[in-house]
Image (cartoon, rainbow, N blue to C red; front, side, top):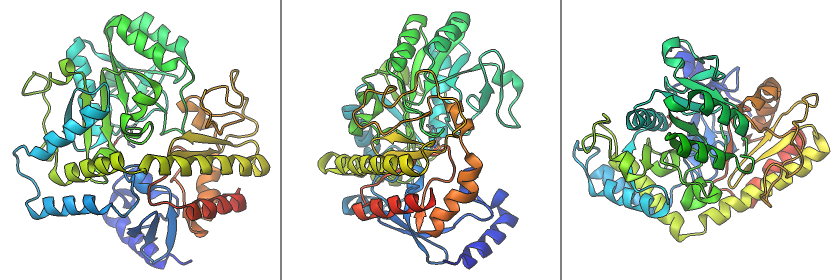
Length: 446
Ligand code: PMP
């Protein structure tokens, strides 16, 4: 397999795009990332014409792989032919909102935006406005997009910006706590409860090697928010319409958030985000309320058509059965391979997401860690020192994954996530053959 053309494009890219890319994660692995030429079902073809089984799937939005179902393609093409954008509302936005509110129990009203980042920016503003408070609680190692209120690390006593360009005076309003640690959540509320506008949490931490919630953790957060009058904001940008099917992760875990942020799948592969939730909150956005929110491209017809038709298709076909079944087979197959080849590593994931966490053998197992103990899910394929917190990803052999494992898998025709933090995604286009091929490659390269 050669990558001559890819390397040539990357050289050009480095002169005109920072790091050669338009989103940081895409530059992996080094010394050069692949450039995509086209997709084909569950596969992607690079600029040199090499074909790979693709588990990146656009980083999550592609529930159908690279070939959209015929009604989705037809709806998008029709919209594009009828004019790209209007600066006026369309019926399509109403229909999409009706679909989401019908299927996601906590969502009564929704505002569409253009990215997951935009959604969490507006959700934080909404929580601050509704509560007239400043602080937001986030999870260490969580990700809510490239925004000022959440790119914060450290702990609740010492929050600090996780990137240059954010003033410390902003970061002090963000309180990072460890995911899955109920006591830490109670402590932060005891100390700051009167000034906590909301808690922003991913149902499953999917940006840090995949950490699954321990029993009762989300209930604790919900109870604390209720008790202190803070908003519980679930970030379902990744899990929405993937984990828990059409009811999203909140149906799977039976939690009723005040506000939910969406992205990825609700736009069917086109730029999208959304803030949904109880009418009393979401209605506070302008113009019905006085929390400013706006966007030239918000509710973009192509994204609305792709998202809505994609979700309608999922409602009428065995889409979730298929992707969850292949996800389970991958996790089971990987568990066997890992047990045999790399017993210190861990298989994580749920529904249609999966990952092998390169947890180091010398990492101390956590107190409450045992096979299946952390989740009551019969599907559980974890064992060993499975990640429970976003910060556990720091214990993983991130460098070995990036430098050795991923390039070796790639050269064998299998694309897994760009780094140890991101999840792998199964699509409706993936086949049993893709699963077998992938398991063979893991067997070889682990
Ligand atoms: N929230 C979560 C949970 C995410 O995973 C992401 C992106 N992967 C975002 C927010 C930001 O979404 P976007 O990249 O569309 O801005």
